[in-house]
Image 1 (cartoon, rainbow, N blue to C red):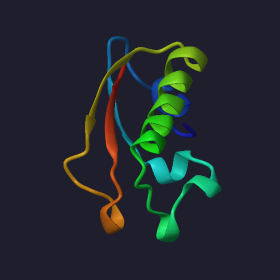
Image 2 (cartoon, helix red, strand yellow):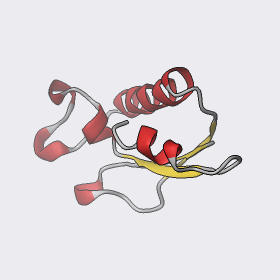
Image 3 (cartoon, one colour):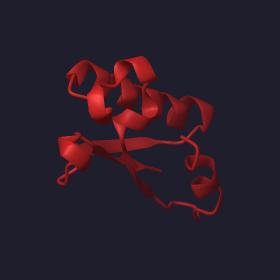
Image 4 (cartoon, rainbow, N blue to C red):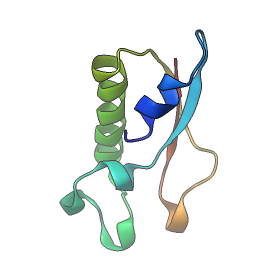
Length: 85
């Protein structure tokens, strides 16, 4: 969420952003497992929803899509790619 306002400020009209969502950085410390691993799918969804709400409600931008990242994070952390406009 920290970099998105700056990224959108330099984006040309009609442009898109693909951002990597790393749940371990979007959740509260008590939600993150040993070694920074997030295994619970409900927590993954909570992190995604946090970013989606920030993008659509606070920034007024479009959430165009989401996929699982084909590359897992360190130690198998599940990460996601969001398409924003």
